Image 1 (tube, rainbow, N blue to C red):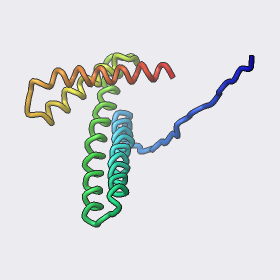
Image 2: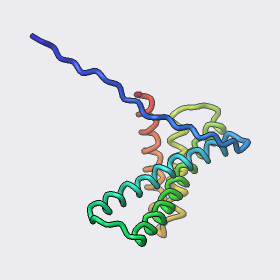
Image 3: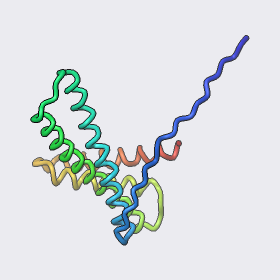
Length: 146
């Protein structure tokens, strides 16, 4: 009986931005802000480009709206990522070890801070902290698998 196999490899492009702020904490925070902020802005660009093609037109007003939305989303997601990376690095320095617990604590603190800053309801802070910690821990465990 013939056997067929499929073999392949998928690697993601690696982009390193080197900005020396003079301290590893600041370097990691700015790096996280720039990388994830760019991802957030690109997501908006792709989404709005899809809708422009679907409508069949692109006006100056919609282009201006897209640019403003890109800046807003990029700044928001960049801030969240920079805060998370900084918190995780801080946990690593405080605890003196590099493991998944740093991601969990950093994610929980980031979730709590973002929730407290952006929500009027203070009842959401603890659930958002739990969500942030869970997402960060899951991402760390998935990184260990690859």
